[in-house]
Image 1 (cartoon, rainbow, N blue to C red):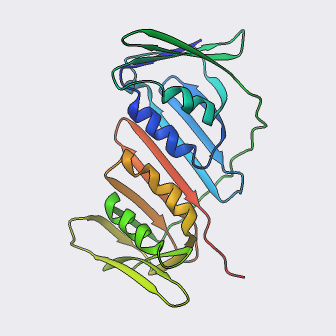
Image 2: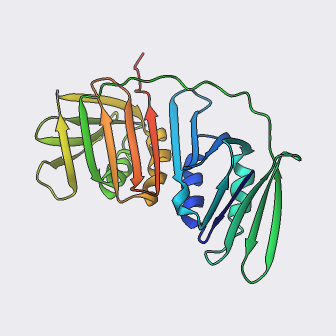
Length: 249
């Protein structure tokens, strides 16, 4: 049995929209302390980890851990029909293998979405040892991605003990964003070794759509090494992406 109610669906919906940039069919694990997902995108380039805590629901009931396998586009299409003032209740019907979604506001509306069968791909164990950890205002990363998009299809992030840099270089143009330690927008700069890594800009463009979830983004990376970008609201939600670096031929 699983039944949960949200008094305001906006944040939950925004978080799932960010997840859906990479995951089209997902398996949610419903646990006593919240709703989780860990999945790899079809290209095997991005690992997405999602957590939404039970405390954010006005009511939350689950007897044993459940799995809800759904088409993300279909689920989001339903959630987008809710207004900010609607109470949204999710109920898993174990017998029919369907998810009931009810909106209560000016009227009562009920949607039923069937669960789907997904061949679960085991997410890889990642014992990553990052050389750099950055906490930066999300708006700065948005600026760096926007700047890079007019120059090239790749983005480079690098750090030393004094500075964090976002750059991109095309055939003719190049752009470089620098933010030094001590800048109020750079909340943390912890670097064991100077490092730089290159990534596909398209993936960064999708990742930054999670920017509306948090004012600060955590960025961990190494030298020609994967990066982990984390958007977190303490005691509310966490969404992180582990992104493989771009390897030149």
